[in-house]
Amino acid sequence: MGAVNGLKDVVAAESSISRIAIEDGKAVLEYRGYNIHDLARHSTYEEVAYLLLFGELPSKSDLEYFSEDLKERRELPPQIVGLLTNLSPFCHPMVALRTAVSFLGTMDKHISFTGHEKSIEKAKNLIAKFPTIVAYFHRIRMGEKLVHPSEDLGHAANFLYMLHGEEPTKTMEKALDLDFILHADHELNASTFAARVAASTLADMYACVVAATGTLIGPLHGGAAQRVMEMLREVALPKRAERYVLEKLAKGERIMGFGHRVYRNVIDPRTVELKRLARMLSKEKGTRWFEISEAIEKAVYRHKGLLPNVDFYSASVYANLGIPDDLFINIFAIGRVSGWTAHIIEQYENNVLIRPRAEYIGPAGKKFLPLSERE
Ligand code: ACO
Image (cartoon, rainbow, N blue to C red; front, side, top):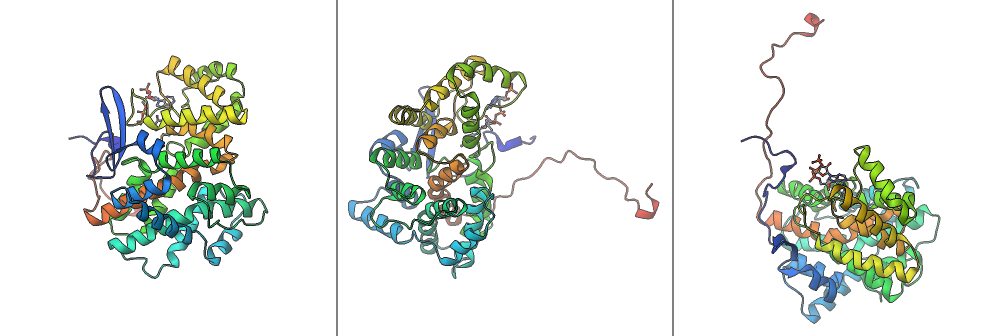
């Protein structure tokens, strides 16, 4: 059999974390058996993180305990604050996050333990600390005083509080919480697969999460949302969308935020939720990001038949939440770290080394000439 470049449609692992299926012509996404639309309407990020890590929805007291536990883990060790302070202010915030994750590993006495309990501990630490790393680095690079984590606010509200220095409105809190839920897991996407490849060698969890953060940054994956925002700024007016799209397509360039490896001719259920959120926030904030996005969506569909992916409406959601463009991938990572760590634990617990083969297409059997005999 020939190579399947890009592992397109290859089923590379068994997993009981998230399920993507096309049923009755519609895409279905479930986390641990629960539909994403139900989770979006009725759940919170903390509850979803618990579900991903432990496989079941928490009871009321389990959720209270888990949420308190996360709160207690939010603060960063001074060494990490020192590291973030010493990074160059023009370092991309995703590079800062990736570096901080690696550094956190240096402070864990149990770094190489891959057993269930220690892995859950590490996962909770990473989930709790990701927002603090991102908010602290942002404030440090802007020359602003750190805002320490609140003991009262939930995961999403606390992040916005640490970032902006003031408590968010209920709408902003709910919007970001929903965004985190929608980004929490997505089967074997590229960054999760990278994490699982690392986990399959029984590398430590920090190494696996470094692999995942490093993979997420690429513009064909999580990096697309930042590029979408650049596009929205360039288009600037809904009536200019058509021309922009035609020019891009004529040059053979990709339009960021469109197309998906799995959702080929069906809309990604997360996009449906994010579009609703983007519309609501743009109306509330009085911005044109939604209108411009919708005009681009229509033009891309008309001229290329492509549908928007999860990154497309994320951009206007984040812009309306006052999040700087170059933090967009970090927001994705704050949501996705619960999924990454759940997958790493699943890989450790049913491990088979991931080591595929390549179809060799180079020359073979060449005669070696010593250096002195080569022209
Ligand atoms: N703009 C223009 N054309 C596109 C786009 C796009 N965004 N996406 C795919 N196409 C075209 C390709 O040129 C190709 O056309 P052709 O058959 O005429 O040559 C066809 O659609 C199929 O594309 P592939 O590259 O085979 O699709 P693949 O599954 O490999 O790529 C990917 C999926 C990487 C997401 C792609 O659609 C893309 O580059 N999108 C833009 C980047 C992006 O938005 N990434 C975020 C993805 S979601 C996420 O990771 C969270």
